[in-house]
Image (tube, rainbow, N blue to C red):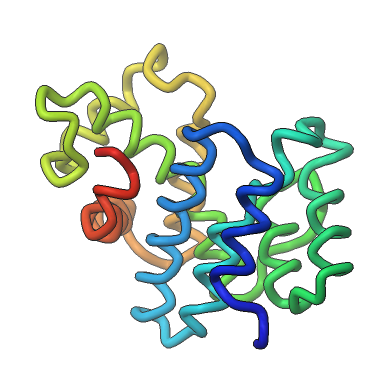
Length: 185
């Protein structure tokens, strides 16, 4: 793949002004890179899928727009079909079924990264490293906490990936801890 992370990062910054959405992209990238190492995937491609999965969301926030417009832009810029398919499959409304390990991983880490970041924000030290699986499970029961995050999707992601929810949460916490400075947590 001749497209580099720098290219993907420039594209993210071109389309995404929100610092919180950029941090979400960095978190998903870190989790995807960690899963690529674990599952013997192409770390660069998996990382870029994570980095770019929502790059079009600010400009095209509707179900008709996101991620369809992003897919069109990525195709025009020469991004590979496997990366574009993973991004399309992360949104159930596209109808693109998740088949590859990369596609399943992207779906599994997307919402979880957002939820873990929210949990870290309410910790006294605001640190992702101090988030425990037990705390995440407790926050999942609080329907008022991060209410936009579907608890069903969090569980479904781990299930599709073929790992226990607890193992998945711990793994993603570790991945985010590695890049905590970029995430601000």
